[in-house]
Amino acid sequence: MVKNIFFARKKRVFLLILCALLIIGFVVIVRDWYGVRLLAVSPEIYKYRHVIRQHASTHDLDWKLIIALIVQESGFNEYAISPAGAKGLMQLMPETAKELGVTDPYNAEESIAGATRYLRNLYDLYPDSSHPNRVRIALASYNGGRGHIKDAQKITLHQNGQPHQWESLRSHLSLLTEKDRALHAEVWESGRPPHGYFNGFGETLNYVDKVMRYYDRLCHFAEIVRKVKSIVS
Image (tube, rainbow, N blue to C red):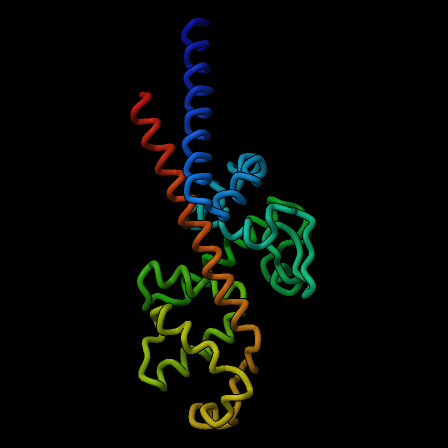
């Protein structure tokens, strides 16, 4: 029995080393900056993996998406504070944290639990979108605010676009600034977007792109691990 435990441990170590070498090789060969950053925070990913998986599973979300969001939000710095006042691993704004029942945004588990539930709530707001579109629109809402996304959907529909498809919606986010007041007058009686001008639309577009790039890399790395496991076992 001791011998079996010893060989099982050796097998796990070998598997970890092989997976690490394959992933590092991929990152180096393709010169992938997103992969490099993921490797840099891999100790933190390992540290919080059980908490992330637990809450992602509770809310029926892919745990890799939650990791990608954390990497973009805080780089796994649980004491991060943004210039706008967002705090913790998941960069929750104080009012959002309060609504979610997060009493200590610097507590990693509280932050992950609250933000994962919040992301799921946002995802559920878009039942008319396909899963890939829902994920991207939910991420845009997480970063830019549900109100701005709702206004952008209204403009998209007004211009005969597809408000439930991210590629169509994203091209209309830039129309929520003051320079488009004439268009706003056509859409809303008040002549203004109900949730105000959205001058930070570029940041939100960049945010969604980056989170999805991290997510794609994590899916690729997970596939490498799966294939190595199947070969070794």
